[in-house]
Image (tube, rainbow, N blue to C red; front, side, top):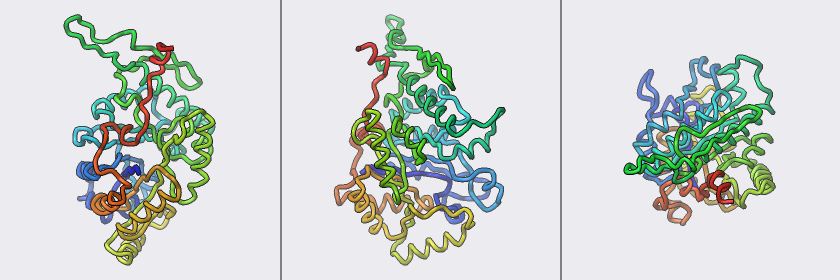
Length: 377
């Protein structure tokens, strides 16, 4: 069973900021160092930093916490504070370029010894257009997905532009790199024209893990072609999982690709009654307009939650779960301290990391450079 932890603001409940220990005073942003180290102690596969829902309207209502820390520098700050756990960041694709994204992830993947994940987040693209704006007309929905498909393809070519072993660093001969293993990509497409090569060496993982969570027809087609991991709400996920796997197989991908993790948002306490009372109190503190759908929420004890995860795993055949704690660090701490030990007792979750990279944690293959494959052909 694979388990990731999704972090957004002070927790995934809209009233989390009112009770979270991460909120230590006016004007202070939450600090995640201790939280991520604790997740690593629990041997979770990774921590994913996702944007909070909503935009300027939510910020300006005065009651909601919609502050969105930029995930890329955030995971960069956590690289040196962790050793084994994966670190995932979402990127606003509508207003960035693939060269810059590929370079940033290549650097972070090397600094972290291969622990990064790119969350390709297209669910909020309409909001991104409003937040950032365009000098010209806003692209149509179909064009945005076409751009995203090309964006991901260009990033992959750039990561491949340095073959493994390209850096020689031979001081005696004065040869730093084997130029025969460094390639321009010469990409010319509808949305991007990129010569390459990347100005950063190949990521430790070959490519960072690519994670998606867009259940629209366009999003599923993109995930079938490009995602290593797909996140989907547990309720109503059977049709999505079936369609995604069928599309992936039709594109020649290996059986079981991509990995599918079910989103679950736990709100836990020492008894079922205490958990229900806690949930009711949090709901009462939240603006009803900001209350999320409850399809992925679980309210109960840690033991009940462990039973729930085990039953879902057996019933759905999913690869694991993406946990969205209602309040941070409270529900994440109960996950690590109480839920995971129960899953280990059943042989459902690891007691230690077997590898070092996030791809190893998730049992994902390491991509071979397309240029190395061409040379071998």
